[in-house]
Amino acid sequence: MKEVIIITDPSKVRVLSDDTRFKILQLLRQRPMSVNELSEAIGKDRSTIYRHIKNLEAAGLVEELESVGGERIYARTARMFLIKVGPDESIEQFRRAYIHVEAEKLVRILEKSGYTVEDRAAMIKLAEEVLDFIEVSSQPILKRVSEAEVELTEIELFHLLNMLVFLQSCSLCEKSRLAKKLLHFE
Image (cartoon, one colour):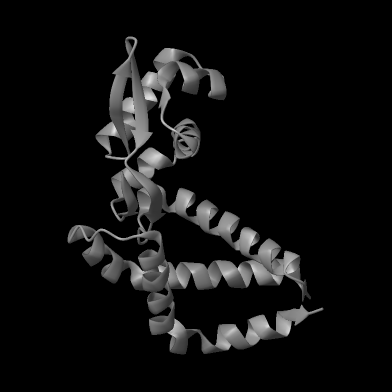
């Protein structure tokens, strides 16, 4: 299993945009599982889970590890999937929803860290704009890394993402000033 796979292909994101497939990947992050185990955990019949597994397998996100007692055991192909797809009409709704959820998580993290957010809705909107800008702007670099099949560890990915943010920092100065106005440390 690889540490990180960067997903830049919109067709693979479409595979991930299905709730059941997304749940399967979440469960497989814990440990490899059989179709029976996944079916029981998700509450859907075996044939439905099997069909979704085959879609994930075709997209290169899941692989068969072994067969135990007549049951195939499936695992993720990577511990972490980094979704970095530029604007694409066919997945735009999923991409926007994903960015919104992540923006809300960031605001919650700041609040849990002791920051007071003056205007929560404005901060979430600002976080969405920044995440979207960085995602779209970093797309060409991440696509090249992905196409070159560079194997990254989680820490290397973290450093690469920091560098990509740094490369966009001058373009984000005004948004940074606005964020500082919306946040106060208690």
